[in-house]
Length: 200
Image (cartoon, rainbow, N blue to C red):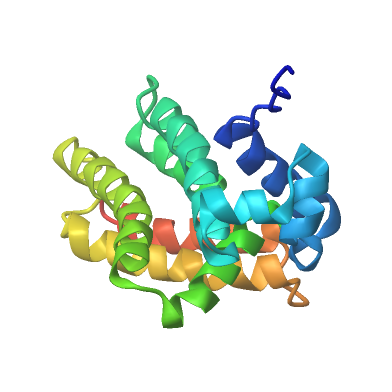
């Protein structure tokens, strides 16, 4: 009697890509283990075996999405351009595309769930934040050293700029009236002119 062949589980990246696609197309509320299992041909129990919980699935999906954004950010920040041009590219990548932007929708959900997250999950979230922060600090330091930017403290300025970007980005992602992407980018660029480029 032959042993029945097992259908191999799809690669983890395919599962995470499917989760992100479901968030983009149907919204986060439609992303259940059962629905995702149907999408990738696995049972919800099988998914839970790999991810342990929906919280872990969401965090891994965010890490996967951030990995793609990180590669794009590295490409933008290492190209031949002025520090100001690369800073504008950083801001463009940071700010959501619009209401219900899937990456920001996922970010907001992970942030919300982090109130009860364990130390490992918090460390992983901090690692994502840290990558954005380090890249911005390095870019600001370069711009200051070249005389493109005022002599600001890169770390302090990066902390404040990212707080501004986070606040505006949340408004865009949730669809707050009067805070579309174009308006927000205009506010941020004017802030940079006033705070970073004055007297440069």
